Image (cartoon, rainbow, N blue to C red; front, side, top):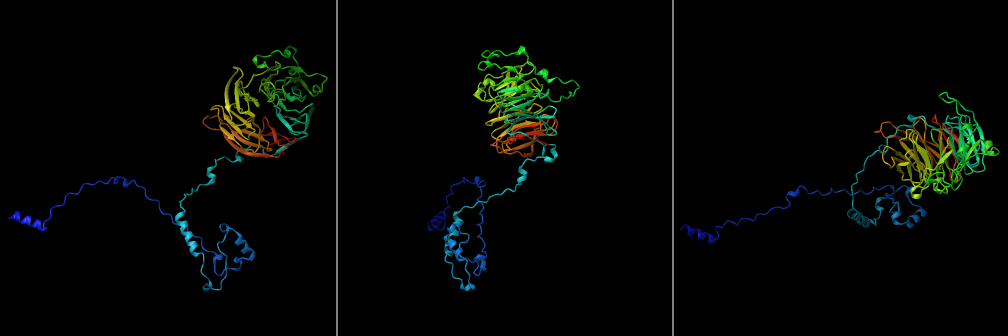
Length: 511
């Protein structure tokens, strides 16, 4: 009976069977819901500019256009107009008519709001001075030259080279007016003037003896200036210059066509040392020895011991004659290079202050040679297009070159062959860069823009500390002549004084 009763209830629909179990469903993205990025925050629309006096219905009279201003406003393109309407004057607000461009301006405003993207730019509040390196005050780095103390005037042409005597008493200048002049440093008094038959291109004082090497007339002359000789600092009697410049018959060079040296002289004539004839004007001027050169010598450099003098002739016809080392005591000459790799010309050279090393600067690199081993030690890559000069720091660990593409390149020889610093302070070619030979940490660079840069270049004995290079002064008093400025500069051996020679025919002592 119970079963019949349940069946009847089921048929009547009063009892419903339980629903089937729901299928199990998993949310595939449930774990990644936390990783979803939030939508970018809505940026508020930029507000329109507030109306000014020109938008007033009763503006001041100075805001109303005249007929000329109205005509100019109508002829101006719409995007170039400062005002998008003509200012008008009404007596009251009820006289103001409807603005005909209201609907168009609202439509353009809506287009700007939803078509033009907006981005929030974060501005960095950075003090510009904090980005610059912290350099010491130049006043704390004194002494360095700042003004002209003595002017040496008398040359009529460009002064090509300037050299200071080892004691600092005399100054020699070589000029294109075919004269070599010797001056007294302290007073600017001209001591001697020596005339040649062609431009004097280079001059250098012997560091041990009171004598000069001069380049003129395609010759290198060794000259006795016949000046007052001071006693040596250690009390020894000075060696007479005349005895050093006596011609030695035993060292007569071989006739032309024979080789003086091995392969280096195969394609060049022998170097001949000759005594200047007593009846010649050069002998009367003090020239005692002469060496015929292959072209004009542009640079003369003495070894610190005073026996060797290097001569550089970039335009020599024979490659081996571009750089020749002359030994004064033996009266012999050596050609270190038969040829150079890449066919580059020798531009400058320098002797190492303490090691038997010889630095040769070609157009794009500097090569260091060991003269005893006769082998190349190192090659320094400059990155410059045309090197003009090379100088070595008194410690011997740093080399600096100037270049015609306005750069001053600094190397630390204890590190790689690539430059440690590349400095650029001039607008035109850098003609000469030179370190102070004494105790003062100074570096000078002269340029064709008629200025000279003075840098405080302090080198520390601690190898972990980098050199401190600070520009301290720009010297400006020379004039540009035919595109040339300051052609040469040299430091006083004991004082922080600089001698400069310019294309304007003037030489200055800066103190």
